[in-house]
Image (cartoon, rainbow, N blue to C red; front, side, top):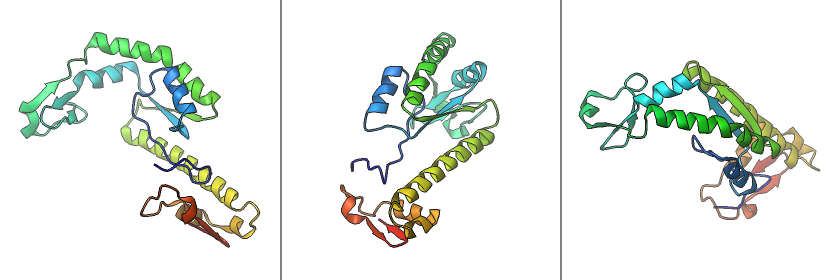
Length: 193
């Protein structure tokens, strides 16, 4: 994978439930996978328990289902298995562990200048998705403006670039070269990769 560039940084996504400790967050902050933003999607404990205690998996495909939130098709019913680690006691321990570590984890990211956003998930999934999408769109627009400003440093014409032109300039080359610098050129008023 090519090295991270200040002009053309990569977008990194992290898996749900990670990091679980402040030390893991610290490793991310100081490593190659430093996030641009952190989203904490919060759900009340009772809703989290209801969802987790109802999860089951298709033993053939590994697909997760839930009788209420994601019902399985009829042909899958006989292959369903319940997760053995989804018990009330285990879930209570997980929730307790989360509650005791989440503030330190978020403080690690915030202390490193990484924007943290808490999202309330005690509502419809569409409302939650709408808030997440709106927030990420704002972050992306701010990054595009920053790149445009960086490109226009000393180039008056580049400052007149539209955000669409900047975004076009950020597109990866089809061959995804290890070193993108030789493939980047700045023409007056337009960036190309």
